[in-house]
Length: 116
Image (cartoon, rainbow, N blue to C red; front, side):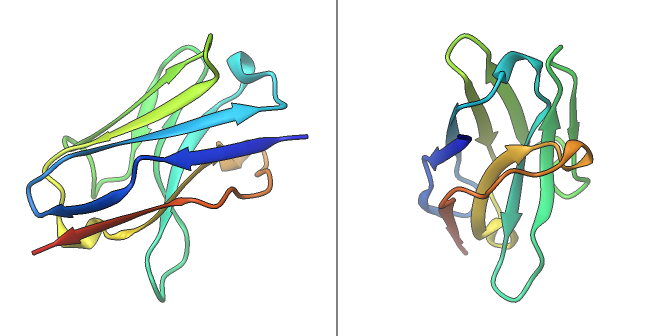
């Protein structure tokens, strides 16, 4: 059974940084394209960043140059380093498989709140 557990969120001032972590279990992690998503109140869930097994990454335009996604296949972990945070980044952040390959059940997510 797939289990995704996100952590690392919190309250931070604009311009600050946070590092999110996602622990995955029940999947052949090293062969899976993973991604971070976020959902702000009243908005649809959106893709933030993705990373394929080889390490190639892609980012939403809104976070390019500020966020970095990475993975540790041995630990079955995905990370999202978020720098120069903006109030518009406030959302609940989730990890999941790259949606092009089908999504699993969502974890509980981790709340990120950026104050101005």
